[in-house]
Image 1: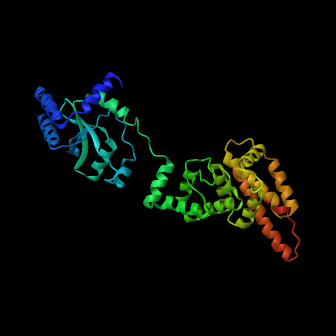
Image 2: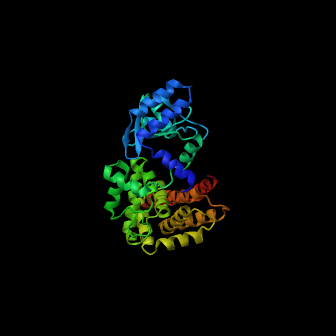
Image 3: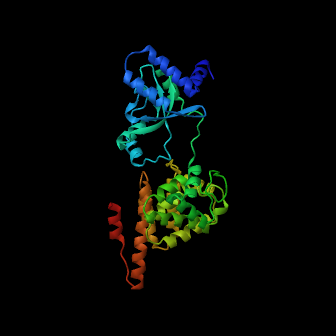
Length: 358
């Protein structure tokens, strides 16, 4: 801690009486802005000392913001106002300057939100006599030594408080014997909490797709492996299930059969060998698993061969083409099964040409 920081620390650790004395000395040197100086002194004299801090109740209209070092007011200030919760709001930090005004050096967005809400008074922690440069230095280092809670810390707190999304995630994980922990290397651990939250924030149907994925991995006995519920695996399977509204039981059984013979690392290696042109690991795995499903589908060999030739002629494979391919194959599988039951022969050249033009 350098000399300047030590000096600032002594300024901040003044007692209430020392602050009052210093404010009076400042006011004695100046004859301008007398009403503001008088109000500030009155506010300080009504303050309550707690430990090394003095808490004061300040009229919102008496507080100023120095734009020379503060951030521009962001659009989310209206969200702060709409979702205001006194239990979550920390006191604003203010300083009384030589010019006789009170400046907010920490909490300007909360101040603007209070003005939007029409609140008249706000609780603050006050210091006296800091310069503009000292305020700016405090503003710049206010986050030092503060460690924000990670997503898993927030998850734990949300589950304890009964928050809907994280509680629903825990309920589904408990059903399949999974834990939710920041230790990604632990077996049976869901290590894609952020992705799970995004899915659960959507419609109920997406939660069903997510459960389909967990059920698949549980049947494949991947719960016993480390890093099997990572983002790339969960997201690739979720995207496949999302596109395929039908035959999900057939597809799940095929994927379970394949994954039982593989590990997460082997899955990524095989996907990378087949689709080296993609950097996105989730996309590689998705396309690779679609190929696995296609190979196992009991459909007309001519259709399969033709579609494979169509995709080999592509110079660049689009991620959605693989999904479109499996939907196309599913459609023909249903048509063939119906016609087979009626003993009708099908000429498939025309619809294949139509698909080629899509």
